[in-house]
Image 1 (cartoon, helix red, strand yellow):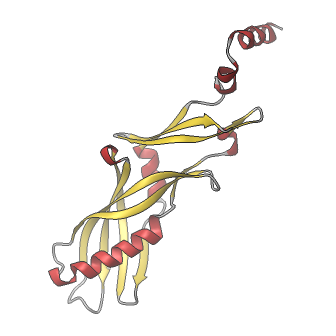
Image 2 (cartoon, rainbow, N blue to C red; image 1 turned 45 degrees about the horizontal axis):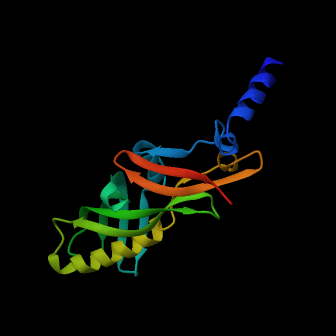
Image 3 (cartoon, rainbow, N blue to C red; image 1 turned 45 degrees about the vertical axis):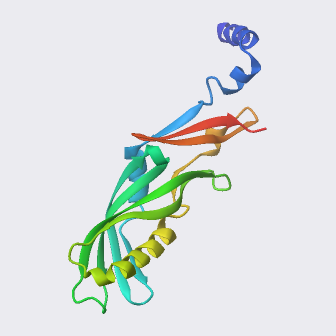
Amino acid sequence: MLQIGVFGALSSVLPLGACATFPFIPSHYTFTLAQIQQAVARRFPIRRQVSGLLDLLVDQPLVGTRPDQNRMAVAAHAHIQSPLLQAPADGRFSVTAAIAYDAQRMAVVLRQPSIESLDFPDLNPGYRGEVRAALDLAVAQLLEGYPIHTFKPEELSFAGVRYAPADITVEPLGVRVKIAEQT
């Protein structure tokens, strides 16, 4: 009986907008670097043959942020073998990607991944362009649309009211997703 009285008193004092979101739906979700690292790491190791001439193994991903660009960063190790190379090449590269909400999948996903840097010390400089092109293709296939978090239906609805991410911000220690009521 006391619980009903307290809820009734609160509902008459709080404006309707506050009742819709408080305390059942948060105003935002924050995904830490550790959570994003775990989501991205599930995708690795990756083995790909590119254009029939290059065997590529990508592993050891390390997630970071680029808040000034509102992008995520992923650095990884790559091992490349090709009949065009005198010997296999090992190196590291980094990729940045935008963050977006895919409403159909209810997921926060990576978009527009692009290689930021490439470091293959033992690779003949004449092949760097081909390696970069192969990595660009592989990265686009592997990371475009890759989910870093998929919302459960109950995370985005309450009492018949639907919510959706309204603003996604990359911060130094993770990603903040602001939630707003859908109209």
